[in-house]
Image (cartoon, rainbow, N blue to C red):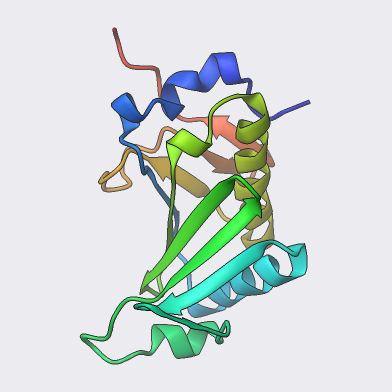
Length: 162
């Protein structure tokens, strides 16, 4: 049985409500957590591409990425948990794992299941919450996310009044 049913959460995946690129994060992370995510990407066999600016490079260790000099271009890691679903991780800080997803790619139950599976894999790997907030949100009002105690993705907000 899926974590979430499309008909119950479709409004969370409406780009007009959430913005096209909602923010997903793991607060309270560490360099070791970042490394665990990098290791998970490889272990799961998800397609990925690491780049710094326009230069595609082999996947480095998290400590090397997060210790780049001030003013250096922010690296990104593109991960495809399925052919049609992309998550883009940006290495802004060691204490928070940040990534974006494109809601236009997450329409319908099948794609929702891919997203929930991806978020669950990260949450279980780290033993931490993985939270989705609206595009540009400050993370203080997540709408859904992986809950460690529930061991699954749960709804964390009420739908907006229409």
